[in-house]
Length: 240
Image 1 (cartoon, one colour):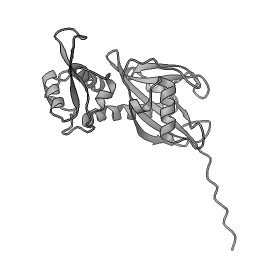
Image 2 (cartoon, rainbow, N blue to C red; image 1 turned 90 degrees about the vertical axis):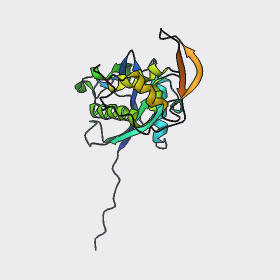
Image 3 (cartoon, helix red, strand yellow; image 1 turned 120 degrees about the horizontal axis):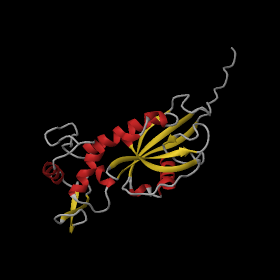
Image 4 (cartoon, one colour; image 1 turned 180 degrees about the vertical axis):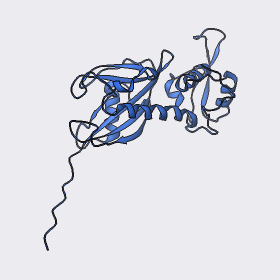
C-alpha cells in the first residue's frame, strides 16, 4: 500500500489590527494611518502590524501596537478582541490572517505614526469613504463601529471615553455622539444613577462647562448594564 504524502502546514502570516475610537471635537473618531509602502501606498488603514516574533502573544501584540500608535498602556484603556479576518486574498503579498482589537480611549490624544506609516490622525467615523481604506479595512471598521455602539447599550464602557472625573452631561454627550442621537438629560441621569456601580460620586463639583456647578463622577466597578440602555428607544430622544 503506497505511503500517504506527509501533510505540510500552509505558511500563513499573522497580524493584529486596531480599531481605536475616541470622542474628539464633538465627533466619534477613529485612528487611521496613511500607508507609506506598497501595497496600497497612500491609502488610509487601521494601525497594526505583524507579530514581532513567533512567540509573541496576540494580546501582547495588540498592546504593543496600541502603545506605539497612541502612547497608551493597554491596562489603562478598554481593549478587547473584535474578530478574526482571513479571506485568502485580503493581502496581495501573501496569505495573512489578522486579529482585530477594539480600543476605546479618552481624548484628546496625539497619535504617533509608527512602522511603515506616513502619519496617523483621528478621523470622524462619518466622514470616512470606505473606498479610501486599504485591504478589507472598510469591512473591519464597519463592524468595529457597530460593536462600539452596541457596547454602550449593555456595558459601562462609555466611561472609557471620559477622563478620570466627569460630569453627567459629559457622559451623556458620549452616548449622543457615538449613537448620533439626542438623549433627554433627566431620563439619562435617572437611568445611570439607578444602575448600581455604573458611576460613583466624587463629592466634588466643577464649572468647567459654564453655568451652575455640576457634580463630578468617576467610573464605578460595574461592567454590565441591566436593564440595557437601548439606542432604539424614542421616548427620550429628539433629532440631532
